[in-house]
Amino acid sequence: MQSKTLGWILLAPTMIILFFFGVLPFIYVVWVSFHQWNPFAADPSMIFNGADNYRHVVFDPAFLASLGVTVLFVFFAVLTEVILGYVLAQAFMKDFPGKAIFRTIHTLPLIMAPIIVGSVWKLMTTPSIGIIPHFLKAWIGFDLNIGQSALAAFVVTVVMDVWHWTPLVTLTLIAALVSLPADPFEQAQIDGAGKRQIFWHITLPMIAPALIATVFIRLMDALRIVDEVLMLTGGGPGSATRYVGVHIFREVFPRTNYGYGSAISVVVLYLTIVVCWLLYTGLLAPRNPKKG
Image 1 (cartoon, rainbow, N blue to C red):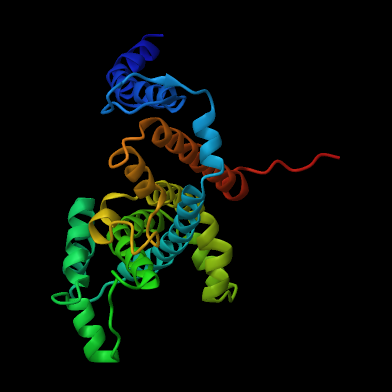
Image 2 (cartoon, helix red, strand yellow):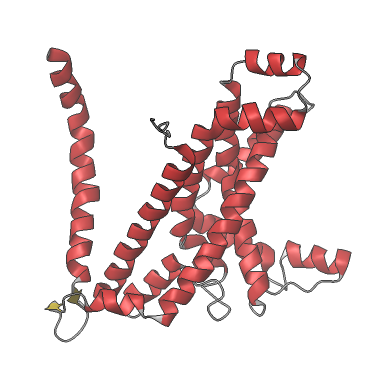
């Protein structure tokens, strides 16, 4: 009994902080989403409009377009990060010259703020001074201009996100690989299993919990990307990189449409929860054997 009381006492500060900085803001956003509100208008009062904001979200072509391009961004970015992160994790499991230095350099992007990442990539991709357009022009004769090419802007945002967050995936998978027991791998090698069979039937199932948890984290982060894209492309050219987070930012701040922006935020949160739930139930949740 005393241990339970002590546990609640130790958890109380965290729960209080989460309530004030997590639950209350969410409730307030939901409340605002049912209103038409411009706090900078001549009449800054809230006007209750029921579910009109949510009806607008469903039929808003700008939001649907931003949602579509966001899904593509999340798919390519997260998939690339998981594959590249696993390859690097396997490489770091072996000893090679300069391993410690390379691991340190590889982890450096994680300590950079997103706004700084966007600024760095903005400098590197500016046609007149950027190192990336310079080498692409010198090596393969390709003129990179993310201000004019929608495809180039999309690809560069994906590459930027991969550069920024692959180290997180690598570190997570290294921890998962280090914790694996050696007996199943030794037994598989004795039985004549190849590397591909060992990966699919032993390694992948054993690291699945850590892998899915990492995908969840990256999925939620990628869906709400704002800072880097605003600094790099501003959501352009056109609406090529106007991801959902950037779309919400445009609605709330330049257009001061707080009610509609709040409704979009709630819808995106709901979609994120649904996607994570589907991934969990489809890939990680235990399956009970059918009886009878």
